[in-house]
Image 1 (cartoon, rainbow over the protein chains, first blue to last red):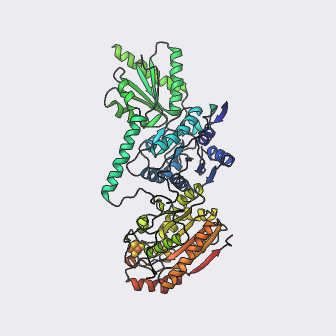
Image 2 (spheres, rainbow over the protein chains, first blue to last red):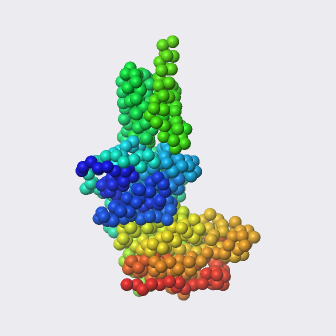
Image 3 (cartoon, helix red, strand yellow):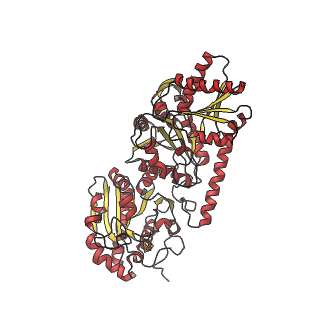
Length: 360
Length: 247
Ligand code: SF4
């Protein structure tokens, strides 16, 4: 397919359709309205496509639950406050082992917050979010192309593990326009006939549930989920690195934060060709790329975490480091976009101070 | 010897878990008989609720998808949209359908989803120990209305069938009771009609069953059945509230 200029939200929606998603249930909330709007236009054009505007976020996620149980590739999208409302359904789907893709175009919080953007939903996304002992896979794109690619892949991951997958964008990634090459239409969808409900003909009846009367049964179920989450941690960690080889300080950032960080590093390199700053960009936030961070700490002791929050991913960085290395932090939580020049200034101060201290 | 009564094949061969005199077991039986008679066991998908009927799948031998409390109509919507030819029904109590899930119920009905709500009205939250429900009668004592439901404070009981029948895309709404052989017969007829409407894709259908809960009403089983006639049905009149033409 050719390169086309697209909004992040539209790229997500189109990629979902290419991935075989034929059911979308959503509810309006800024800054992701362009996504359901696009779906309302596109779904009726594709065979079997259903767009339904639900009466609430709660209803939307439960329609997703029903459609997933009936075997569909299904998606919903929202923004932070709406994602809070969906947590009940996400928890049930994790318990019932149902696949679905949930897109969060994150805005400012807590509460009504701000309609622009933020990275304040990191905890909510990576810690399960709803009640109970579960995890969701969390993908963190940093461009419109990745919004498309990761949404496409999210459906495969959801089906592979029968678990909800979250695509964690933000108001900026949703609203910017960039050239994007759409993934090819998925022709063959996974066979789900061994677990979905479609009427008990030629087989015993099936129950898709998360309720277990006997305590022991629930414990077994939780261990079963745990083993699945362990598999995901083993197989699905994703990240990108830049200039780690000779780095003296490593920046860790994801999504829009990583984009700003890349700009800042580039700027510093232009000013001082001897500056040695590397980057680790987690593209899965759960499972978190702990190993590469720990491994890097064998040769580099300074890590600079940048987030568009007061510091949430930093906890995972510290857990990864297990006490080794020093973690520095810079954050802008108030829906304010720091320019690369601002971040560059902070990074440079940190970097040169560290080098000076080492020389002493 | 001629067999006149036996277990429907849509019912598992187990003792049900409901209290003696409970309406749930009768409603289960009605559904199972109809699934057999209408040859729908292989087409049926039920959405059971949290509550006393959470284990409906131990009784009814059909596919089921458990819904969060109150979300039955939304889950059923999702299933039905993917499988328009299945018989999809939610099985919900009064707190589930008319309190926490009222929005989902109203909007599924308003969209005219081709699903059926099996609505069990026993005027209390039964599984949690008999708290006040949206359908608790004025003056009725429950564990959270120990002085009796006071309409000045808690409002009057919600009449679901009456409200839903105002919506254009509701195809069928009937209130029945399962407290006597005659009423059970009528309840079965109503349920059959609701299923027929769904199969004919005429829109949303609901059957509300006034259903004894002797345990939480703190009455004997016979007294409970009498109370349905003498008190409950006076507040919740039986009958058809809406029926569109079945194609
Ligand atoms: S508590 Fe009431 S509704 Fe629940 S099983 Fe017993 S009689 Fe039936």
